[in-house]
Image (cartoon, rainbow over all chains, first blue to last red; front, side, top):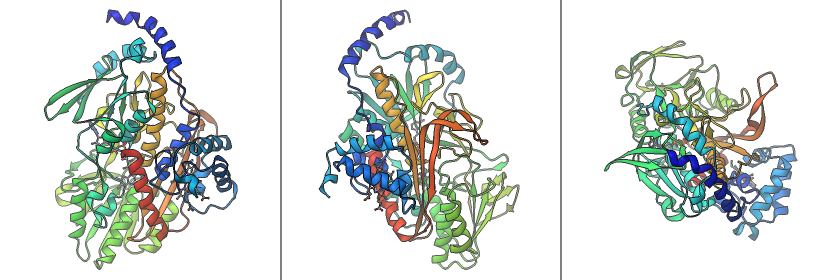
Amino acid sequence: MQHKLFLPIALALGLAVAGSAIAAPPAGRLLASQCAQCHGTNGNGPGFDELAGKSARELRDELLEMKYRGRVEGIMDRQAHGYNDAQIQLIADYLSAQPGGGGGD
Amino acid sequence: MQTLNRRQFLKLAGVASALAALPRAVGAATTPARVVVVGGGFGGATAAKYIRMWGDNVQVTLVDTNATHISCILSNLVMTGALSMSRITLGYSALKTNHGVNVLQGRAVAIDGAGNTVTVSTASGNRVLPYDHLVLSPGIDFIAPPAGAWDANLTPHAWQAGAQTTLLKNQLAAMRNGDLFVMTVPKSPYRCPPGPYERACVAADYLKRKGRVGAKVIVLDANASIQAEPVAFGEAFNVTHAGMIEYVPNATVQSVVSSTRSIVTSARTVNNAKVLNFIPNQKAGAIAAGLPLNAQGFVPVNPLTYGVAGYPNIHVIGDACAVPASDNKAVPKSGHMANSEAKVCADAIVRALAGEAPDDNVTTNSACYSPITARTASWLSANYNYGDIYDAAGNVKGKGMHRVDLGEADIIGGDNYEDMFTWADSLFADSFM
Ligand SMILES: Cc1cc2nc3c(=O)[nH]c(=O)nc-3n(C[C@H](O)[C@H](O)[C@H](O)COP(=O)(O)OP(=O)(O)OC[C@H]3O[C@@H](n4cnc5c(N)ncnc54)[C@H](O)[C@@H]3O)c2cc1C
């Protein structure tokens, strides 16, 4: 038990090392992971429309359209209501940078 | 089963908390951090995968009693014979090969909160696994009825898929003209709010298709009303399956005698049903039961980390946890939600290992596709955002996951039935591959 008393000092040093070695997670990664139950990990399938690699602008515009058009046609329209506009932008930016076939269509 | 020594667990917890509240020691750069995940269902499998994907060389060990996980999702269609058991059997090999997760078959039987170890009973004896973070996703356990003689082998619940599903399937198949299929809906909160109503629908549809004249489904609901998709199931009960399903609300179970398939509730007594699908009330899986529990028997968690108060390096996700939410807008216990929570937990653990605070720009969501007949389905969708949560009067009562959107299908159709498989396969892959 006794050696644990020294931990705080070691931790302070460790933090400095870790802080420089590990980059913060990319913005939007956690938010975009919440699309993966229906679009596949990183938006890369299997699932509904492939999202990975689609342009950020297209993704954002489609999501905003589904969110604001008033009528709800399907489950995706509902899901689009689950995010604020800033979150939608972060998600679109993250997914557009993922490798995948979404850019193909 | 209550193998965790609660007193010891709690006594030692203070020390563990003090240590865990601090970031990892200087050795972090050379010694990989160790995460143990107990329970390889939707929550646990997803957590193991995403910690490996997102973490910096974190060593992850996934522990499950069984060699494969049999999904409850789609299991009502195994009950009717529409799908095979292999269709819903999910293995762990992709987690090993694609993501480098260590998989250990065995039952976690004890947690040492001060020593940061979990003991796993395996075929070759006990193994003690040290951890920096422990994630528990053990699912549910059942609460026995207040009286009678309950035996799940005689009156299967089929609320954990596998052998139980096969038992119920065989009993349904043995029904003849005029027979009764009696089922219960547990008191909320329980696993999969739409699940019991979905089961009533596909059982009725099965009996109709088999031409079982006069056979009926009786739904004894411990709650005051239908707990999910009231529009879709209201129509299914009153129109689609009119005359086949009798819905009885406010039916609190008082006694169950499995040998005679008899049940007494506050609203209705049925003796000698042909099938008694008694689905008991539920609580957190046993391995979580030594942690602080709420009045319903689930573990309250911090929605940014899924950490447990007083145990910052123990996390509980999925059906076993209770997430702070606005009144009447509870976070549902679903496989989709367990997957969603697992990612928030994984992100928080990866950040904690790097000495960072958890993200507070956090969302979760749930979706369920419910078969109504052999060809049609409805769906339910719900989204949650971290922030203020409200009491029934609309006053802020704290922070938690506030439900920002809820909706169900307005058409019960064939497209939804097809989409159900696209969704399930996507969820299965995101969790297990
Ligand atoms: C009929 C039915 C239909 C459903 N339909 C849907 C649906 O359409 N959509 C949806 O999202 N959800 C659905 N659900 C709900 C979904 O199945 C659960 O919410 C989900 O499985 C919860 O995930 P979990 O990780 O908390 O627990 P589980 O998936 O149950 O996983 C728990 C795992 O932990 C293991 N375990 C437990 N204790 C220990 C221990 N001590 N040591 C080692 N291993 C242990 C178990 O073996 C199990 O594999 C349905 C449920 C039912 C019953």
